[in-house]
Image 1 (cartoon, rainbow, N blue to C red):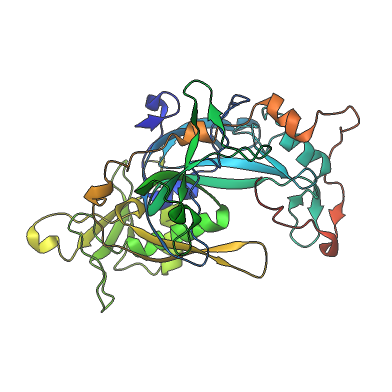
Image 2 (cartoon, rainbow, N blue to C red; image 1 turned 30 degrees about the vertical axis):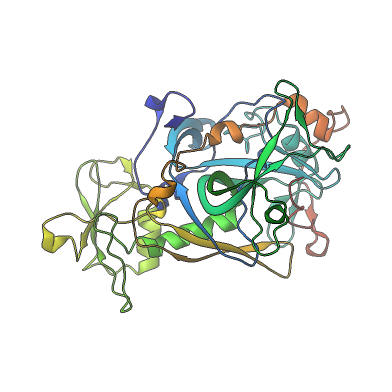
Length: 396
């Protein structure tokens, strides 16, 4: 299922790594004031534990800014995940989803966003990194996936924080419920005998650092073949072997893997990014020619596995700071979703969940702009000993 606007506008092509390297921004527009907070039905990897999950590929139409200066424009492209910008106000300890749109880095072209207003009003350039940072307002890029979590979930009543009682649906006179993840050993919901189900479809938003952990995991997953299910054994020999890279538009050869003098990282940098063909002059993602050592004797063409083809073992590890490290500790051979959970593995409407917050809601969270709050930022620098704390804390 495609989510977003008219899918005929999509600019498609390329592997997950190529798409994720190219994808820089997402859709414009602002959402309604009263939408469901995105932490409802959110997936969070277990801290100091391991979850088994399956990322579910979607088709999300979003926008990306391309070009420079006056020639910058927005193009539409379909991605298997979504990207959004999260603003967190360190003073109010509240957050919103940015509504500045695809041109959020261009103050003269961006859509209205109270978070961006405060960021630009208070941002200065740091002394040690040269980056623009605000001591008040963060601006963090996040990435969202649909994820099937194989864990157990309990049906639990939603509780009103003020009264301490269950929130009731006036139409049905029944409590509102959430499906909450089982805590395992010592789980209070298990002790109360709360209804239990195996597996649930969730949405998972993550930081750039955690997103890179997934991209790095796919480098290893890609050594397996999704057509025959072959994967590296104890000898470490990969069934998928890269032979060459060429232009998909005209077929012009670009890299011969067996004869090139490029190092692995150099070749990866070229093939992950778009490439301007020297013959047809088109900007394209290069197409890879591969062979599978298992498929070839069978007379069939192998297919490099991607994130969506395997079950992942993931967990969070605490660090010395507030941040937590996402660990991908393993993955299954390429295979379909477990038949017992196949009915759950449907794409999530991430476009609706992470739609930008309405201006009225932003004013409620961060306050209205004042005439005095007008200036051109970044004329000075923050000394390296006085930089704002990062990150600004969890979403509340």
